[in-house]
Amino acid sequence: MRRLWFLCLILLPAAAAVAQSNFVYTDDNNRPNTVSAFQGADNGSLTLIPGSPFPTGGNGGGSNVDPQQITTVNLGTASFLYAANDGDGSITGFSINPQTGALSVVPGSPFAAGTPNGNYSLTPSPNGKFLFATDEMAPNIHVFSISSQTGALSEVTGSPFAAAGQAQGLKVSPNGKFLVAGLRSNNALETFAIASTGALTPVGAFPASGSAIAVDINCKSNRVYNVNASAPLIDAYELSESGVLTPIHGSPFPSGAAGNSFGIALSASGSFLFTGDGFSSQISSFSIDPNGGLQPVLGSPFHASDFLSQVVPTADGRFLYAALFTDAAVDGQNVSAAGVLSPVPGTPFHTGQSPVGVVTLTTFPAPTCNKQ
Image 1: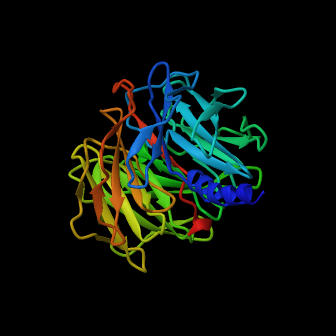
Image 2 (image 1 turned 30 degrees about the vertical axis):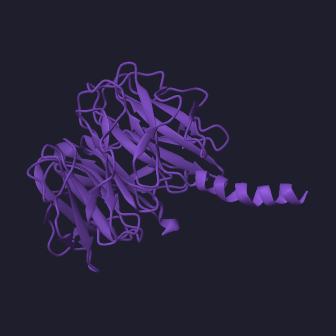
Image 3 (image 1 turned 180 degrees about the horizontal axis):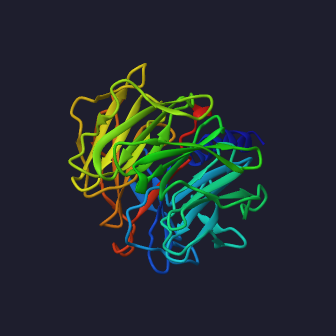
C-alpha cells in the first residue's frame, strides 16, 4: 500500500503536466476538409498528434485568406472545437480530449451554417453557450446555441442576423455584452448588443482605416483593436457601455506591415498586441500604454517563416503561433517578458496537407481573461 501511495504521488504531477499541454489546431480548408492537430513541447516546438488530420465531413474553400475559421470552446467540464467548411457552408464540431488533444466528431456534424463559399469567421461567447459565424455572401451573422452535453449546434431564434456589410473577423467582448465584426466591404466595424438568448441587436457601424478583417477586445471590455487588409494601420477604439466605438488618441497606429494584415491578437497578459504582415513574412509586436496607445517593441517587426494570416497566443503567454497560408504550415515564436519574438526550434511545422487550402489556426487551451 505504501508503494502504491508513493507511485500515485509520482504519477499525479505527471498527469497534471500532460493536462496542461498546449495544442494547436489548423483548419486545412481543403476538399475534403480536415483539421490538423499538434501538441506543443515545453520549448514551443510542435508535433502532429496520432490520428491527425481529422476529417470534418465537409469541404473547404481554399481561396480566401479569412481569419478565425476555427475556434475552441469550454463549456463546463467539456471542451469543443469548431471548424468552418467554407466550400459547402457548414461547421463541424469536435470534442477535445484535453490530455491527448485527439478529436471526436460531435454528433450531427457538419451543421448547416449559410452560403457555400461564404467566407466564415467563428468566435464563441465567453461563457461557451453560443457560437457566432459570419456569412459575408449574405451578408449576415449566424448565432448557434451550443449543447453542453454533446457540443451540437442549433440556431437561436431570429438567426441569421443582418450585417451592414461583408463581415470578416468577429470577437465577443469578455463581459459578454457585445459582438464586434469587421466589415471588410464597408471599411468599418459594426457592434451588436447580445441578448441572453444570443440574439443580436445592431448598435452601429463605425469607420475603420481600411478593409477591416480581424478584431480583438481587451479584458476590461473597453478597448477594441482592428487590422485592415488594405492598409498598414491598426485602428484602436474605446468601447462604451452602450457599444459605441470612439477612436482613441493617436489612432490609427502604423501596423509595421508593408501592406496587408490579416491577423491581430492581444497577448495572454493583455500587455502586448501582435499583428501579422500578410505578404512580407513578418510579425509586429506592440506594447500597450495605459491609454490604449501602441508602441512598437524593440526590434519589431520580427521575421516569420513565410506569408501569414492569423496569429494566436497560447494561454500561458509563452508562445505565439501564426498560420502560413501558402504552406499549410504553422510558424512558432517565443514571446519574451518584453514582447520580443524569436523562432521556436524547428519552425515552421507542416500539417502534411495540401498547401492549396488557406490554413487558419487556434490554440487550446485558449487565452481567457479569467486566467489573467
